[in-house]
Amino acid sequence: MKLLMVGLGSMGKYHMKKFSALGFELAGGVDTDPAMREEAKQTYGIPWAGEKISDFPGITDAVSLAVPDSMHRDCYIEADLLGKPMFLEKPLTRHLCDAEFLKNNLKSPCMVNFSKRNVGALFVLKNMLEEGSLGKIEKVEIEYCQNWLSHDSMGNWRENDSLLWRISPEFSAGGCFADLGAHMIETMIMLFGKIEFKKTLSMTTLPELIRKGRIQYSSSKEAKYHASLPSSPGQPIIPVDYLGLFDADGIPCTIRCTFISDIYNEATIIKVFGSKATAMIDTTKDRKNLFVTSTDGTVQAIGGVKALPTYEMFKDLVSGQTQLLPKDFPSLERAVEVQRILEEVLY
Ligand SMILES: NC(=O)c1ccc[n+]([C@@H]2O[C@H](COP(=O)([O-])OP(=O)(O)OC[C@H]3O[C@@H](n4cnc5c(N)ncnc54)[C@H](O)[C@@H]3O)[C@@H](O)[C@H]2O)c1
Image (cartoon, rainbow, N blue to C red; front, top):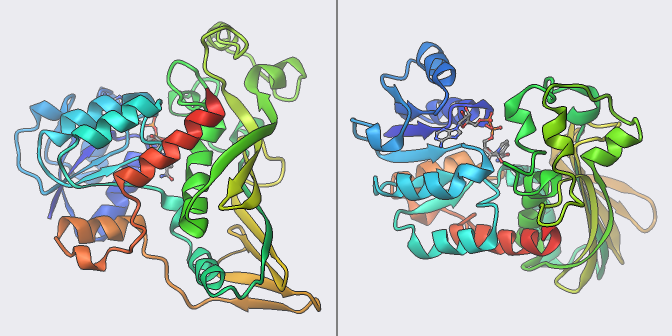
């Protein structure tokens, strides 16, 4: 099976690694940046690399796209003309109207890479919730933390465009909540069927952090980011730390997403408090086992359920083995539902 890769940045490289390991042959790569095209040719042996999808001269069985959020809508529309299954990145778009436009207009089979569901412990939890083993669910806490703003652990974000687009209103769909929150919302829909936004409990923006001296900031690009303070009318809000209250099918749920965690490089932490037991996932410690603490204090590690990774799901979709896809496949419709919640929170 041949694959055309669109967007050859950090996530595009990861897609190429994953899909090559699953047996896809890279048929070509598209990126507007000549340096990225050259690197992809050298490192991944791509036979063709070009600036536009429409320039691709070869044939392919599938298209994978990993371009910045602000480019999703247009690139997805262009790639759809190839008429092949498409692997799309989250968040689906910057705005709900664009997400709905895609849902109504894309003709090719699509799936969206909500990759934070690629955790076995999550499916153990899903089974336990379905069986009612935790008792009546009282509350849910979910956090997705990264720390690249405070420690530069992913590189110098002041200069590096591939990090800056996540916090610049010009390119970002809405900072950490659109980026990381999209995953958490999808996870909650997967676990509880539906989720509604209630209210924002707290939010920190990049200019606030700079003002308080919490992070060091000096760059020629400084003026650009100060000019787009979220208080300016018409500017989207760009939270770098966000905590909100949601309703997960009648259960109170808090979601926190942050780019400035002092503790974690990258972590998904989920706690579900039930009348019989509390279940916890901490992906920094264990991705396979769910830790269940009963009311008498005993702790059990429960595993044994394999998550079908999104990359493998896409392979099944491309090879026509759709009977292997799970019921709650991360479809275009699911991504639009996630976008609806993002929009309620951010605008
Ligand atoms: N699913 C996940 O867990 C996950 C993780 C990280 C990033 N992402 C998503 O992946 C996407 C890309 O993120 P990234 O970190 O790789 O960004 P990146 O900046 O590293 O890479 C994006 C690449 O797209 C190229 N590009 C920009 N406009 C283009 C266009 N019109 N046509 C072709 N190429 C174009 C850029 O030159 C760059 O090389 C984002 O939507 C992001 O939210 C998803």
